[in-house]
Image (cartoon, rainbow, N blue to C red):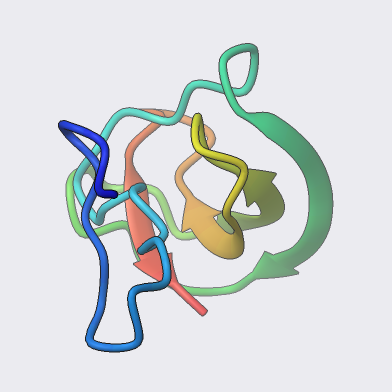
Length: 77
């Protein structure tokens, strides 16, 4: 049975719900620092991104790169 507001892939597994462009919410998501990137932010003039291992509100985990200045998710890796 599928829950409302939750996306599933073809194998009926939940999809990691954090998307590029979304505001990074370290207090809402369980986040731990993973690595630093020397890459430009897609949304501001920053030249550094921070990588985090995160868990979304459904318990799915993944890795994202965020900007420490504008707090937007720039990539999933």
